[in-house]
Length: 265
Image 1 (cartoon, rainbow, N blue to C red):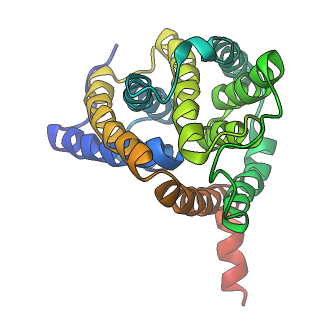
Image 2: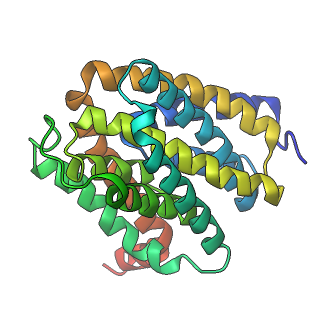
């Protein structure tokens, strides 16, 4: 078990990175775009970075979930089936990624994420108010909870946006309500995956716990804005985060080819 593998100054910097990432993540998702590269830049191995990132993300998603539950935006009793299916889906996803390569998903994922951003950008009234619900009970729990939970355990980027989109399109929730409920399921899948990272022994506990505190604070600030400013804040942030996340994933998968193409112009 390792507690710190970086200097105290770097740990302080990572605290503030986690705070900013959790603030963004609680509103629109995509906080891992900041934390994973920061952990890698700090000198952690890829396995350590992913495990430590999952620990801090649990802190952020728990903080936001707790705030939404206490404010009455989410009733846990009504989400028990969704939570159970999300937990199971994340376990299956985490086990699956250990035996399969995620290369194909990495190639097509930017298309899915940019589609979410375009959906919210081109449909300005989507999520403006509650609409008629399309799925109830187990069908929604399997799709909006289990399938997205599987994806979060298997790969992860943009899972919060997928949860929110499910609540908007399938449950008819307004955007603020969908974001609040999405964060509860996001915490569930994060916690499920974290259990396996702990068993794998790759966590850098000291660094992760410091970042968890930062994420807890940042997520609380973001959650307050979700309930106070809702639609006005969430929609543009979802669009921006979707574009940035897609660009990063495209660069990670095709950066060399993109540079070669530009150099050939």
